[in-house]
Length: 326
Image 1: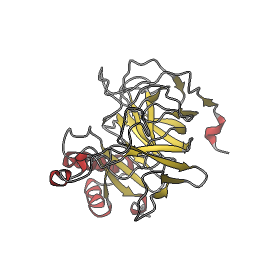
Image 2 (image 1 turned 180 degrees about the vertical axis):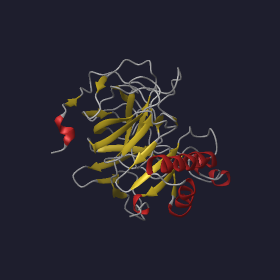
Image 3 (image 1 turned 60 degrees about the horizontal axis):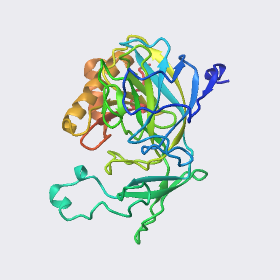
Image 4 (image 1 turned 45 degrees about the vertical axis):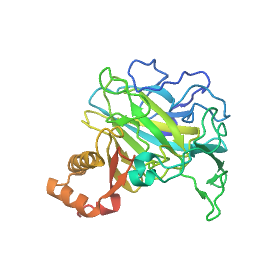
């Protein structure tokens, strides 16, 4: 039996809760959660629509939470294990064109305008296109426009764009950027089975979730994924006095450090440096590597991924590369 199932399962009423768009310690607590308890909840899409396509609040990126984690104190780390991240409706939407931040200036002058059909997806907007989500088959398919060259149909990979705790001090960043507290990370490895580790800055950590994507490529180059609502089930554990300085992720086959910073704040070079420095510390403190061994493991087994264009970078180390000496 799964030990986590010995604890009660909270099913939180979606309609009864307010939604916030800042990672602030001042928001009233939505639910108190003990480490090990399993929480089932839902998130809205980035525009504020729920699983029934009803607009519950304004966008961008309304957040479900905050969840107060019992026993979490500043200096600790919270580890959020996502048992389920599931599509709960049959449609999503994305941008119609790559963002200007993803292309060279000389190309931008020649490309097409980001205008498709006004009011097709969201009232008052013309730069979105609709996608059909086949939950039974796990397929994401562009509804329109249709390509004459290829079938725009891909395997779904549900993920959460926003995972974060209340930011340090009185700072209340919106749900658009990311930082050391997590936030709008938009990292496509944060899906079912992933564990996200975040530093705690306030008692209870105050965890927020949101911004579900049915699919998103590396870097989020359109400025969004295939935006949709989600069913989410998670549990949380604590690591006391962990001293984390930013987000980490663990999957079944890798450990990951994220150099998390708001887009356009600094170059990706800085994000790469942040991720690399944290990974050295991760390998030395948590896995017992000598510092020189951590450097060489990163040099010859590490993989860098663009998390958000002109924003954050991730450094991925495969677990298969960390065979213990007998």
